[in-house]
Length: 401
Image: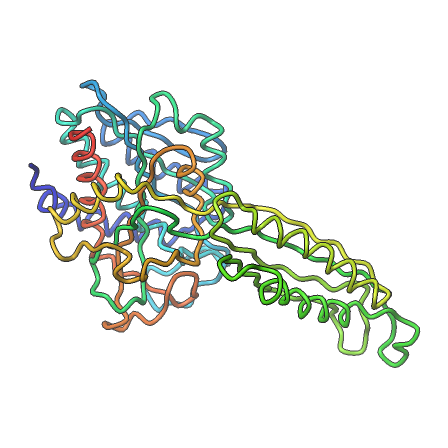
């Protein structure tokens, strides 16, 4: 129906420029004033009237000239709080911040799609809602925008997102479309604080060592997975950060642990069980070592639910443009849900949703590192393909429905 891929290819140089500008000046969480202003300016230049939504989001509408349904297309804009080590000329200029998950790629691709959709606005059978979202990395951006009216005015009937990947053994430019069901795990952060009594390293009997208690708590928590979950239940408990003390000859007052809990339970019953047992184990083990312990939980993100019918339609549209370079994700994953989490999952619990993945840097071509690594690099030669996929999916789905 459209030569959308060829049209998108004409935008490639502009998309690379946009992506690299965003990459050099990453911002995190909701604190993204320059990124938001940059995106807003680009949209206005295309003829859109973007509206600010929530704490730092933007929404723009394409189409609306003909009656029909509304499809939401999402790009996240925030970066990670980490220093970049990738050897690229456009590396981050903002110390302690890096686009290590490819959100700069997503934003550039959706801006490209916005331009394509504006050029085809008379052909849109309904409305395309373009969402530029903050704070995905802390799982707060999506619920913030939903509570601010993202899914209404006009009401959203279907939603789609694309996420780039790097370091996979697939050629750059390959699309993977998630099938119906759970495609990624839920995630919840935790923070455990163990309180003892500090003292000199030479007189441990006069202190109450929180490090010993925390270490035993960490080991005891592993028993939840191995002894308390049923064989068909999935739950992953991970401690990613453990801190205590500042000096080698001082027993500190406190020891702390931070980590995540992940499940593939839509109702999060497994997560609730894990949290209950974590609290009991923390308090019980700490008491055995004369300490006190508290567990806090925050930044919950549900598992991603993919609508089977929408996924089948999307794979069909993708194959019509990209042929064999568009694949069912289950071919690669074996039908298993991914371990990573994505806050677009909040949307998926409200409206039919599909997620797509675009390989942007193959391990076969020297792209050794994946997302969230300080040396990750993304192949931005695929940007126009992402723009074409966004625009074509919306145009085709709205026409068929």
